[in-house]
Amino acid sequence: MRYTVNQRVIEYRAEGERMWGENKVLLDVADDLIRETTWSAEGFTVAPITRSPSALLKTARALLQECWHLAGLAIPPDAPAEHYHRFANTHEKHLGAVNFTKLIPIEKFPLGITAIEDRVAEICGIPLVAKNPFDQQSVFHFRVIRPQTGDNNPLHRDVWLEDYRDCINLYIPIAGSNSLSSLILVTGSHHWPESNVQRTTNGGIINGVKFNVPAVTAISGDFDIVRPDPSAGEALIFSPYLIHGGAVNLNHDTTRISIELRLWRR
Ligand SMILES: [Fe+2]
Image (cartoon, rainbow, N blue to C red):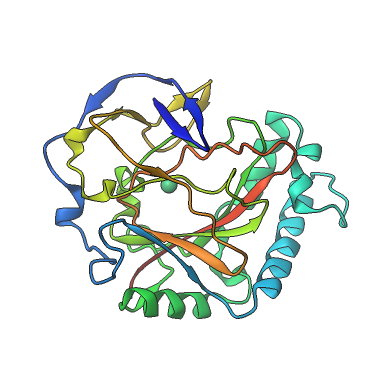
């Protein structure tokens, strides 16, 4: 798969069997939580989610330090989170730490989950809750992408995994998120039929690293890649039906960390 972002051509090769999808739009049979918004055609927006951006960052970074400490990663308490890659300087150390920064119970959400649920509900005009109806889990994750590495997952739709149907996604910047590292989206792709997209049949394997979700391997026709850059205290809110990912961190010495959170209709 080849795409251009930040005026750079990015290319990855996914191993394994590939398929073109059926002539069906997955969103047509879904609970489309952004249907009534002014940004439903694009599939995403950037909006403020807290009145206390600095408190959100401070609380999130303290929680990260706690996770890294539990993972046995020796990061000095005063080291900026953006310097994570200087300590997690091998793939093994990074994967060890990732095990502790994912699937975090929602009770630990910085500044409390209720305020975020209410704010995004207001934006979408639908009551929302951070609870997955498919497995009853209430969790969030830190996504940690070291600079100039293959830490980022490939382009994908979350809904190729059944557990993520009917939700709304949030990307909340915590450290090192900027125009060279933030999430990449393919505008309007949530309305495409599956026949527009070739993907791996199972989870994508890229450079020997296995991802849960299938990877996009080709797109038929033209497509628009965007890289919104939400500020501290804002979130990138997007449909899980939208093709996204492939967000290589093009910074040289800055780790990008974001919170990944999903909400469903309450
Ligand atoms: Fe995703």
